[in-house]
Length: 154
Image (cartoon, rainbow, N blue to C red; front, side):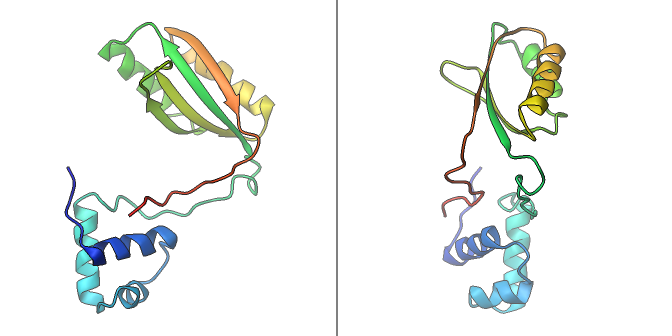
C-alpha cells in the first residue's frame, strides 16, 4: 500500500535519509515548518510505515568486516514449507545483510558481510549444513564498492 506524499513529506524523508540524527527543530527548519506540524508529519509517516526506523550506518571496513560476498542459491523444492524453512534458517545469520527471493536463473540471493575468506568459508559451511534441498550455491566476491546508499530516490 502506498501513501500519498506531498513535497514537504518528501523533503522530510530526504533530510532523514541524509542524517537521521537531526533534531525535530532542525528538520522543521529545513522544510520551513514549525516543530508541531513537523512532528505530526513524522508521526504520520511512522504510523503509515513509510518511515520504518532510524538507524546508524556503520563502516564495515573500520569494524574489520570488509569482505562482501553475494551468494546465489538454487533449490529444486519450491514449496511453501521449504520456503518457510529456508527463511527461518537464513534469518538468524548475522552475516546475511540482505536476502531476496529472485526471478531468473537463481532462486535466492544474499549479501553476506564478513571479515575475510576464512570467515566466509565458515559461514558457507554453516549455511549449506543447515538447509536441506539446496541444489547449487554459487558465490561471487566484491573487489571494491563503487556505490553504496540506503537513500531511496524521492
